[in-house]
Length: 609
View 1 (cartoon, one colour):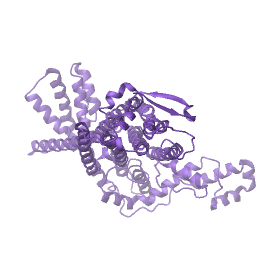
View 2: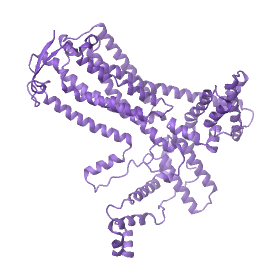
View 3: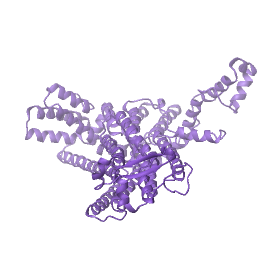
View 4: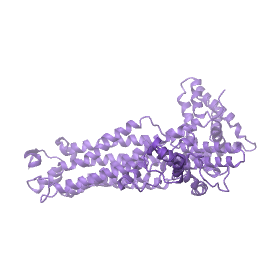
């Protein structure tokens, strides 16, 4: 029978005739339901929990892999833990839900679900952030044109407290700022939830300040509790992330095609989060869902959505870790096979280009004519030679641009190729320069810039992945000069703004001594301050840096070797395989088009005649 419930004041004394829905079903069966279906839900939740924990431990053990370092695993794990706790509670709700108080369910949904969804979308935002920032590595620029990423630049303590906090937030990278904004949003959401909980008499008939009267028996009040407006706050937060921010992410990442499956993961998560809220609302308010609610309660729609998200967020990276290890082993095996074939003869690395030219010709002929046997064996041998260090060094020396674009736009490791290229150019300039104090100073400053942009944990946005021993050695050599150089750059940037306090150094006195009040009358006080700053910085453009005794052209040798090996076993084989795939896709097209496709990926090798 329909339940007749009267709600006054806020609902304008309307009479609601309600058909039996999830809430009425729960109160009518107010006891633990240990049915076969209930045990199935519990078992499924336990199995998924075990797999999830294994996957998180697996990813944590391999967190040093480059593609995992840029994912910010702590944010991913925090999102997954919050979402899984909510999903587990919902799945067991079929069994124990009827005896759990409505206000307890209200708090679970108001905390774990909004926080988990917000952190999940923050983790997805990291994909867009990394892809956009890596674009700057897709082309070679002078390091002087780059701005350093100053994570630890001190804040002006003379500013008011609230301006200091805003300044700190502005200096954060985009991902960290997103987390700060999420923290602020969750704080506001928590405050509003507290107001709703203590203000509504739905959860406690004895007090409240919304003046909402809920007459009837305790069962009738409990029935209306699950359908009250109090739940709208948490569902609005989830609706924002699933139906507004997620489609925005899909649109912004539509042209990004990475090698890590990150884009597929983002698309999967965005789509999986869409249907949960509408189905939850339908289960609560639509009598047509009553048969479905008898088998699956409305909150379980969130559980299904969350489990699908966990498959993508944890499962896909686990598969990528396995794929990365297999690719590394395949590369090492190919190198070993090539070296074994070369035993008994000396191989000149400069001739790799000729061998690789034969590789592309064999590859083209194999796809066009469908030859097998000896032709395929020749193709395999040439492919093995292309995966060697000599082939990589040849590309880096002759034409690294295609490899750089691939690393930056698809592999998100452009800093490695850019670092190797800048170090190579720096070494070449060192070899050509004369052994004079001025030249040595320029070499050192150039090395400091390379350190600042690619190695320093303070100034580099994407530090190259080198060992701690090598990093400490470079830190001891360049860090002091890097701080002075980058602080000089910061001061120089600040001088572009003619507003601020006048400098108090000796240069101010010098300017006043030279022009006195006439300068101030001519330029104005603000412009005089700006000119004063520039006079401090532009005298000779040099910093008072002490060049270490052990500094020389070999300063980056250890770091260069480590990054070359990393590229050889990670980015380089992907680049080579992409060349094969490009040729494979051109199988049905003319030979010239196919060779052009191969050249696009392997044009660091000599041109095909």
